[in-house]
Length: 264
Image (tube, rainbow, N blue to C red; front, side, top):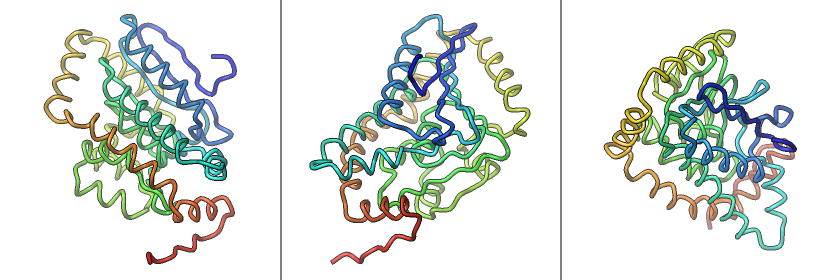
């Protein structure tokens, strides 16, 4: 796609959607998320597409939302409506990945942070390089991972989700594998080979059977996820408009520790 930070290539039934903004650590702008939503929906509706692979270029899979764009919104006269629009857009992208009637594979070659973890969790299978690391640093920014939370609890359970959401710690690919966030972890130089092997194996399955298997899995264990994601939109938008969010974002951009104020 010209003038886009999303590269799209479909070969032999595999639609590869590649985040291509390496100089900004593949941070998610409004435009990039809009392109991603369009392409996920297009792939989901295309009978010629059997598998969707979500990957990225550079050393970082995805650093989450573009904080410079968030700061620009925060400084606008009436940011609240933008917060809601942005939260809804992110919710729509995750829902489209989660509900796509065909397998969706995420390939994380490097660090995955914040909203990037949300993208990963919305996929059916996750392959990661041994050197990849994962983090949900939202509380350090004075905001919440509201839209990520339902998918995190669905994938790993509430007990593990609480530690990942509240600790602020970065964790290894090995821990992500143990927690169920990833399904296979391989040396970085083997990641492409492992991706090819997995997609080849998936392609041996019947399109109908794969779509029905995914539908049954969602019906059995994740029937409320879409509704939970939608309810989280408001919580996410409200959190972005708080004093803590303004201080957290400013502190990050100014490369200093935030000065949290106790609640009155």
